[in-house]
Length: 231
Length: 249
Image 1 (cartoon, chains in turn purple, blue):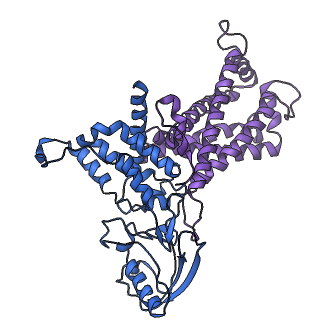
Image 2 (spheres, chains in turn blue, orange; image 1 turned 180 degrees about the vertical axis):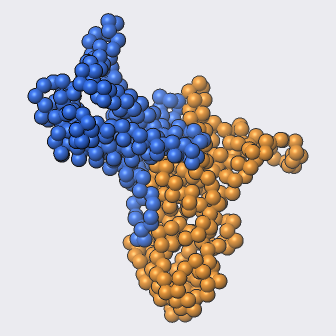
Image 3 (tube, one colour; image 1 turned 90 degrees about the vertical axis):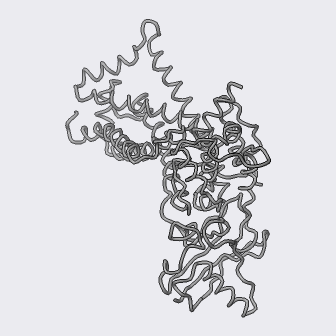
């Protein structure tokens, strides 16, 4: 017998799900869906930019006032951020521990290469790409550290940031990774959570269309800046 | 037909092993893949060499004993067992690379023979039902809805050959375990152990060192019995249900 997850005691409820492979996959699925929910709202909210500078900046400032006066200024955003960090850490922890377990299960590679099965590699490296992107994106659009804009206004940060060609290239690559990740991740999560229809052609198609729509929605903005629709 | 074979040779479990090339002539397109290997072994024996060890038993595609990875595909280019694969699926003069199932829980015993005892231990953990001894009960006294009977039967056709593990990039036994869990959990006879079965079998699957499922679907296209991929969704569903039940306990 190989040394593995094995030594873990048995799963005895949802609190101990992390002990098994399927439990860890369920943690990965739920945290992934939570982050996907955020990503979709983020994408739709971004489209406000097409209603002009004033409305977009107002929208961005309004986000900081959600829940007032029950919540203090920006508290809603911080609650969201903590939630997203928890989801991100859980997602990464599950991905890393499961990947290490998976690699150990296939110590000898085949001499003859076979076509297919790229999804696993794509998810692992795509996930790393997305993590690097998130760090850069926060430094670019949230803190403005690496953004060339002279003011702190969100609209200005977008038009200045995407005025640089390298930002457009990097954001395009990152959205490609995001699209691929949702493509496989959405129906995989449904399958992992035990939804019998996850593998039907209908749901697979839905996942593809959904992934493309999210990436397209995000990329509308940098390319609108490039082609002068937003300036 | 003439073939160039590259076969994994390994004297025993501790030998490092390596690929060895053989030229084989006089192969008929009507031969099964195993008969082709028999022809090679006859030649090797005549030349005083050690024949290539491989597992086989019924040669009818129903026992699950045979199975090698052929040009990177578990059971080769057709979706069937290695014994039911025929040489007409290959071209004259083709190079064929033959390797054993590769997975940490399936250690090589010799050449193309691997130890699949891990599957037996998973079955021992929960792949059974409790049945009273004595004479068998009247067959029609337990009624089963037709869709359940059909789905249970489709999953019961799993012969435990291990092709799913061999084909999976993670060496995962999810398809095998899902077939057994789906088969038994659907039927009235499987109900007493419905909750413990899935928890115990998954625990044993993890303990043996099989990888996790990443939903690549490589298993189901290699499965000679065409166990559907939805069985894995069903395994996850049964697992979720069992965890919920154990939460209450």
